[in-house]
Image (cartoon, rainbow, N blue to C red; front, side, top):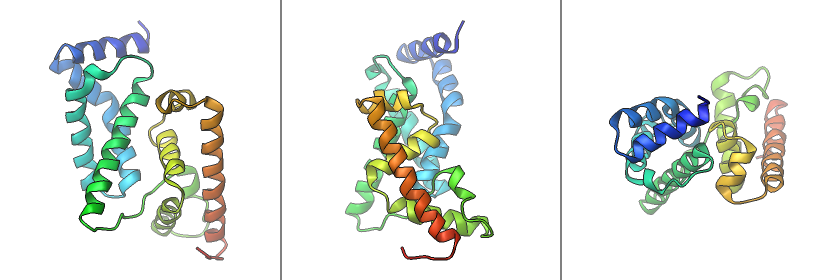
Length: 185
């Protein structure tokens, strides 16, 4: 049995209300989803809360999954939960804390300590447009393929590739500026 067949059986079990199937689905996706929320928020407690919300919503909405990339569907739902959180936070007048991103850029600031690099990465990621941030986070922390991103967003794969590439190029340029001490941002 292939991984896709096994995942489909788990999803079918969830649709039929099987607690064991939900438990297996949580085991499969909880680490990736937690990492996704943590990279978006930079806050461990908030990430735990958002992860809980995601799996509550999964129980409520699993019947709306109609096929295709389950990972794309799940991470789109996760991103929507985060956006709901931000809207609520914005309404209360609080500022959005920085986001953290891209393991490959964490090392871009040679000689700086890890906390300083992560803080700067968070700061620079927050300066990207929201679409670029979403795509980069879903790609690298949600571990979605470009095909899954394309399906989740309803856009051609070339468009998604281009948007991710442009976002990464901007982020790399900002991190290179940080690396060499020419902080203009």
